[in-house]
Amino acid sequence: MSRGHFDYQQWRIRKTAGIIERDIARALRPKPEMVHEDYWIINKMDYPHSIHSVAKHRRFSSREEAEAYLLRRFKNVVKAEPQYIGGRFFQDETETVFQSTKSYMRGVPRGERVPVLYAIHHCVFDHYPYDADVLELNDSTIRTMKEAYRQIRIAEIYAGHVEWVMSGDDGEDTVRERLKEDLVAFEKEYASKDWTDFHNDFDEYDEWFEEEISCRHSLWM
Image (tube, rainbow, N blue to C red; front, side, top):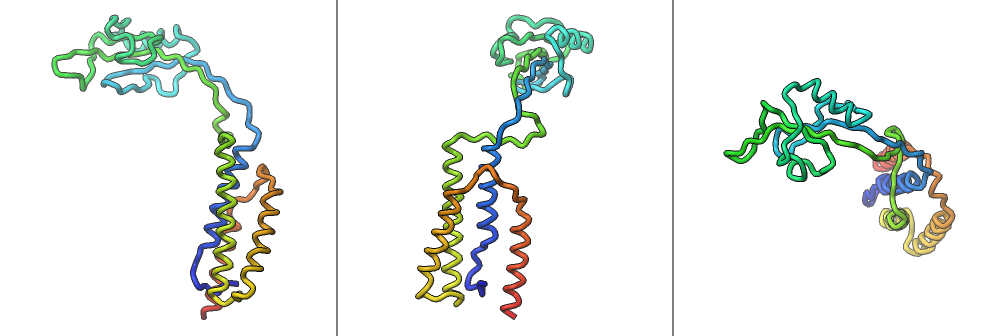
């Protein structure tokens, strides 16, 4: 038990290592099947470079369905003139663009008159289920995180032994031997570690911290 020569925040060091360990396990966990999305939406531009959805959260199964909805909802909308189609306003040149016959964009250069534009946009992509806890990391990043975990745990061991010596809980004649024993034990643990097996919710670190503070207070009183 440390008498508190300096507070090296052991619980914080261990918690940081635990968070890294948890994220490695998340990255190595088998991934769920991806969900395929294929739908159409209607985008509106009423300010240069500002695009937002006309029917929020509304998805259409085809271009024709989206166009029919747009023309039914907005009576003063027609197919856009050639100068409003292409990369100047919408990056995707495959989009079908419409323009308003009565409403005009704000924020355009003085003297320019640009109608409010609408684009039928096709969304095709794959994603993991939104409620799935998925973390994708490449092998290089995972190796770096494993080494970070290792170095943090070694730093914790060193800090603990130095603190014990300085507080009088260990002697200078024995600190090297005890430090070596703990390092050897940790390296064995690290070498055989199953990185996919992690179930800690970190409550134990907070409980450990409260117990440590309580013990220190009893020694100082």
